[in-house]
Length: 329
Image 1 (cartoon, one colour):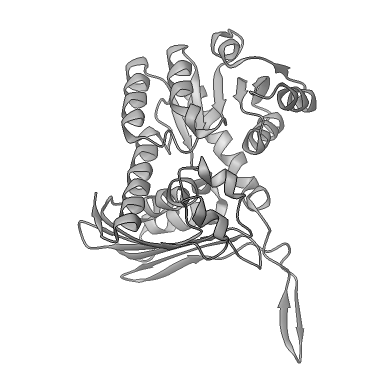
Image 2: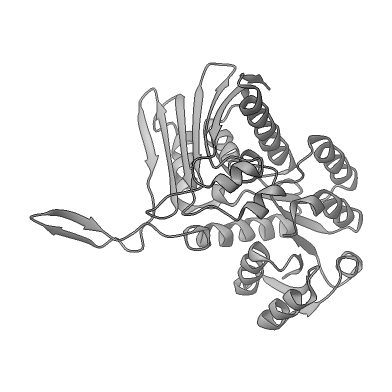
C-alpha cells in the first residue's frame, strides 16, 4: 500500500485524488492547497486530511507525493519531496525554465529519488498499443508521425497569461507523444501559429491554433497540429506511417452505436474532454507509478529526462513561432 500526499486540489488534483482513492494499492492520506476550502472539500470527499505542503513533506506516514499544483511550484516541490525522501509523481511540465529542470533533476539524482512525470497520454490504451506495435515492427521503420490534438473550447484568456503559452501548456503533451512514437530525438523544430479562435488569447500574448514540423537527425518527420476549438468534441488522433504500412488511433466516441439510413450514417459525438477521454490513462499511469515505488524502480517512464526534452521542444517551437525561423535543438 503506497500512501500519498496530494498537492493541489484544483481540476487535476481532483482527477488524481479520485484515481488514488479508487486504486486498491494506494491510500490518499493528505491534501494541500493554497485555498483551504478547496483542500477541505476534496479531503472530505475521499476521507483524507488537510495538511500544508510543508507538513506533507515532513510526514512520516506517506511514501509518495503527487504534485498537481500550478506549474510555477513544480520544480521546488519536486526538490523538497526528493530531499524529504519521498517518491514523486509530478504533473507536466517540471518547469517553464529549462535551467530549473536541470537543477531539479540534479537533486533527484543526488537523492536517488523515484520521479515520474505526468504525461498521461502514454498510458492511454489505444496510444500505448499503437506504440507497442511500432516497437514490434508492424510498420517497419517509422518515417512520419502525425499528432492531432484539439480542445472543444478555449480556456479563459486569464489562464493563458500564466500558462507559458500553447506550446508549453497544451502541445507539450504532443511533443512527448511524438518522441514516444518516433523513438528518436528531434534536432530541428519549425512552428506556425495564430490566434483564430479567441482574440483575447492573442491580446494576452498567446496563440490558439498551431502547427509544428520536427525532424530527427536521420531525416524522419513529425507533424503536430493543435487548436483550442473543436466544435465536435475532444479531438485526439495519431497516425504513424512506416516503410511497411501505417498505424492510426482514432477518436473515442460516447458509444460505438451508429445509425445507418438512406440519408447516410450518423455516429454518437466524440467524448467531450480529457476527464472522459483519459480516465483509463490516469488509472494506468498511477498503477505504473505504484509498481515502480513497490519494486524500487527509481526511473519509471516518462521520467525527468522526458520532461526536460518535451520542454526543450516546447521552447524551440515558441522561439520558431516568434522569429518565423526553424530552430535547431
